[in-house]
Image (tube, rainbow, N blue to C red; front, side, top):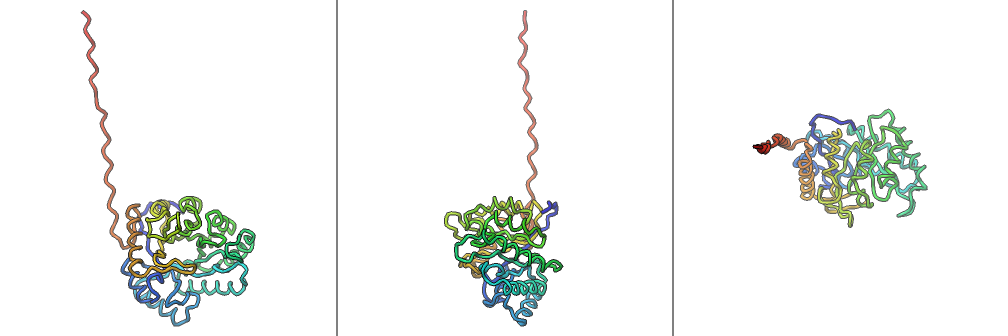
Length: 312
C-alpha cells in the first residue's frame, strides 16, 4: 500500500448480525456508533447467499434511507470441505458476486477450504485450492469486485505463511487479504509478524482480538493482537480502507459470531479509543488533538575556563 500524506479518516463497517438478527436494530445501533457500511452476512437468520428478492430490496432500500452502504458480501464461500463437490459451490460463488454488484459492494469475503476430515492436513490439497481460486479470479476478471481471503482457523490459509503462499501464487489484484487478528492468535501466531509479511496485500481489516494463552475473544486492545500498533502502521503506510467490527464477544462460532447491542457498542468504543491512542482518525469522531510542539533545543551550558595562575 503506497504511503499517503493526507489525513483522510478511516470508516467503520460491521458484521451487523452481531448486533441482532433484525435489520432495523442492526441499522439503529450501527448509526449510533458511527458505522457507515455493513459486511452483509445474515439478516433474520438468513444467510446472505439465500436472500430472496424481497429481502434484498428491503435491505438495499433501508440502507439507502439511512445513508449507509455495503462494503463487502460476507459470504461463506470456501468454508466447506475441499472434498465437497466444486460445481455446486462455484454456482454459490456466482451468487455472491451477483450480490456484490446488486449492493454496489467492492468486496466479496471468501475462505480457502477445510480438509476432508477435521484437523487434517491441507497441504496435499494445495493444488486444488489454487485451481479453485484461479477459477474464481477468472470469473470476476471484468467485474468491479475484489475477493478478500480471510484467515480462518482450520482452512488452508489459516496461517501467515499459507496466506502469503495463496496470494502470491494466484498473483492477481483480484485476490487480496482480509486481515483478522484473532484468527491468527487462535492458531498460535502473532498477528504483528504476519502483518509485516502480508501488509502489501491487505485491502480490508477485521477487528477482533483474543488472548494467546487460551484463544479467548476480548475487546480490541485487551488481547494479544497488537491491534493499535498494526492499525497505526497501516494508516501511516497509506491504508485508507475500512475497519470492520466483528467482535464475537458473546458467542464465537464457526460460521458466525454474536455480541448483542450493548457488547457491540463496547467493542466500537474500544476500537475508537485504540485509534485515538495510535493517532488514526475515524470518520464521525472528533478530530485528533494536535501533537504538542517539540521542546526547544537545550542551549549548551558555557563554562568559564579556570584562570591561569600568574608566575612571579
